[in-house]
Length: 186
Image (tube, rainbow, N blue to C red):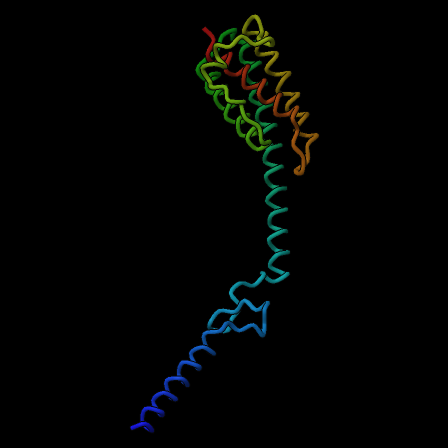
């Protein structure tokens, strides 16, 4: 009976010892971050993959900058068309109102790409706000819109895809104020 008890005790101690050994973390490779399957959990992407991502990012930045310059040229075209149309008709037609909205959309996209915003001012405030640069009449407003848009395009041409131009952001805000003045004038 004692021999049987001794055998069971030895077996229990052996199992307890084995479980202690297997429960210990493997400290032989402290830097190893392997999963249970033996494969690494995370691996850095291959060098070629990183280079491909960097190249794609650079191409995307070039394309975005080129598109911003094209938007600037489109804004300039719209401003010229608006000035010519008003010079010929002396009134703002429905087509001119559509051009004003298009110009506003283009300049908002440019300002967004430059990283600017309206500084927390909403459209109604801009339309009713008294601005120092506000022209006295509509004809003057169209001329000022044209010259301000030219300044914006010149500033955009000075920028690179790596730079942010505060002057271009301010000029785009001025163009937007003029567009809103013309759209919401009474």
